[in-house]
Image (cartoon, rainbow, N blue to C red; front, side, top):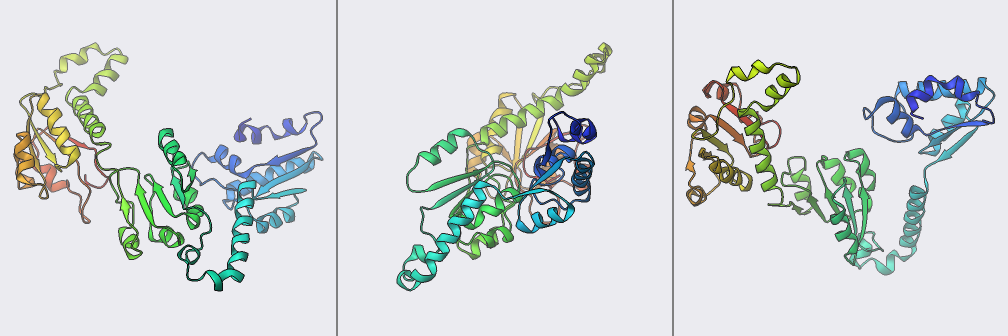
Length: 364
């Protein structure tokens, strides 16, 4: 039964024949009552979750039932006992095994340190194979590739959040991370970390300075998503030009006269201004040219030959490109504190011009 439904029907549940006790899993309770508003975990401090736990406890005791609560730490378990819980459990099998293994390794280090102090692997506090931490769910083929490769161990933490992967950083020699932030705080806790790989191209969520201070390299995946992002850009551009969402909603509402607005436009012979002419920007240019669009682009870091090879006119001033554009697509990270496209830039655009941002946030 879902937690919210269970809390609403506590008395009926507690009257179930043969029921002797109630055991509370705080992580599932939190998820069921609040969705993903709070991180998952055992030792809850949020007032509404504590209130729900104590409501269940009081109702169970009124019904003469035993109560149990799962806890993450001994300290919280002691608090649960003070509330009146009859049974408390602490941690889980994985964490207990991890803690016991770490304690055993530490006890070995202390007497053996003088004999092994000159060896690099002992100095790093490692007696096992290099350990790879995968933070965030990736394709099963990628996990299988990692697990089938000899010479290191792999641990997958599926939830995409800092709170999910941060506790496992101290044991990681390598980190493969998706879109979660990786700040100086997390990097400092990863004392054995030797390399970070971003499961993507952008790295604005990673503290490069903190990695560089430790001489830890950062890898990205390069061209792997360029075509997919470029196709997505064209899909959005077509959806705007053809007013797909508007006409879909109108027809579903029975408004067949919406076709008489004649508001859809063709892409052919219109000017597309591409901001950022890297891998994605160039692929967008190829696709747009297939729709017979005139393509111009801005990118101060790309050689003239890259524009010439694709027959794209190079624009050296953003304002000049905006003034001639019927559509703008953005494919570069934000630089500095000011958005790339702000109020002043929007004023330069033609009425009805289209803007597609498939780059990082903050550009628009």
